[in-house]
Amino acid sequence: MIIGINDHDKYLYHYTSTETAINFILKDHTLRFSPYTGTNDPKESKNWVFDVGTNENRDLGIYNSAELSEWLSKELKQNTRLICFSRDTPHLTGNHLADIFSRGFCKPRMWAQYANRHTGVCLVFNKQALHEKITSQIGTTRDVMSGAVKYIDRGIVKDLWKDQEYLINVDELEHRGKTQYAIDHLQTHYKKLFFEKMTDWKDEIEWRWVVLCDSDEPLYLSFGGALSGIVFGEDTNKEDKFKIVKLTKGQIFYQSLKWKNCSPWYDFGRQDY
Picture 1 (cartoon, rainbow, N blue to C red):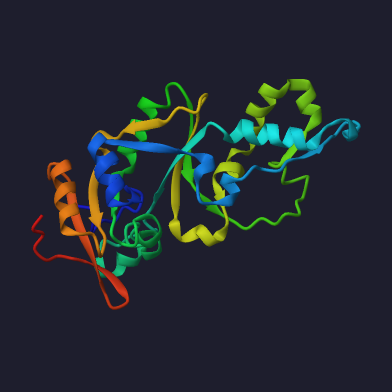
Picture 2 (cartoon, one colour):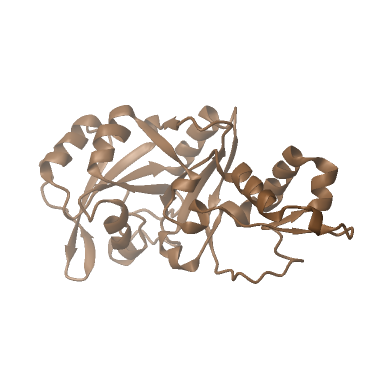
């Protein structure tokens, strides 16, 4: 069961269209990690702009800041992959009526944006099982970062003593060389670079895995038994429901949502698929 639970950290939710679910995810039993630069957030899809600075009074005029900025942005982002999920809002009571607006699969804006205007599905994954799959299949050969996204609005005017995620320290660059500098910069600032978004996104309550790859080859995860259930949208058609149940062999939990006036609710009627 994915409803009537108390543990808000047990499940993760991935909205998608029925076409993608049927033809790729459920057919192949895999999840695809998307290019970081392919998201719908300009902070992630556009090149980052780095300033240059020094603590050793170096002549900054001898450095081409535009070239250095383009280099570091590309180094950090070009082969980075990620996969994103929504979460339940703490704290769940186990009461359907009280919890409905806190559930990660009951977000109408996400149904509209990511699940093809409520005609798609929301895939429900066991968080711990999914983490173990990612660790065993991907984490042994690549650097993997995971965590909740923090929502904060940061202006373009920075405190250069505190906010150095978009600053290239040429002293350290000269001492360590480009390869090691990029690694060190990432390890120091990865949370602000990869796990922060503007507050406008906050209702997604996102959890993500970020993977640093050494090529632009597609990256897939075989999720196996980590899939716990599927939630159908208000307008998911019956034919697609039949296809999805057939692909998953009826071995997981299925639930349809129905809107009653201003609220989503569970369709507890006869599920004839």
